[in-house]
Length: 261
Image (spheres, rainbow, N blue to C red):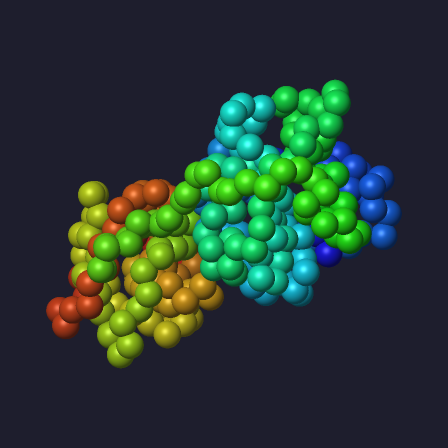
């Protein structure tokens, strides 16, 4: 199985990449994780890959391409970990997932003659993913190397970062909950309030800004049936501090009534 993650959106680039994969490996099974990563958002893509990879069958090949430096000096990678394979640019995107699963080997993919410098997903990464999936060892794709660019999500005690804003506007952080905590003080550069923690989205009344433990096991800021990102104007990459407290939650105006803005 080959799983794709890119910032290509609804463009024809996605179909072209799949066509190259099937040309090299007609029996391949190809799954889309997402192609809706914000353009050039490497940290966002790294978080999505990190939280998704472990739910795939062992042996899956992940082709992840969000590549602001396409055609530049950064090396194209093929990586084997304890249970999976990863193909993509050496810009930090693969780093959290590779470190979590355990690096076994990495190679720098040799550029074939005539390969485009502006569409390496088509000419380097798609053929490499197809070859790995059909059984070619990564050692046949290029010389051994190491990941040159590290990417780690900021975490210092209860200070972390906004790592993703999902389709529903939930503001996802990399901070875990504290067991039994019913309210938290949330502080960013532009926002500070005490928010309640609910066990589910449905447990919050309409229009309330609240915290919930999301599917990745980290804290999310949400507004029931509305976009917390639009209400609070928080974006991926912003630092955030979420501290357990016993204060009464604040009422944060949202402009939402009966579940609708």
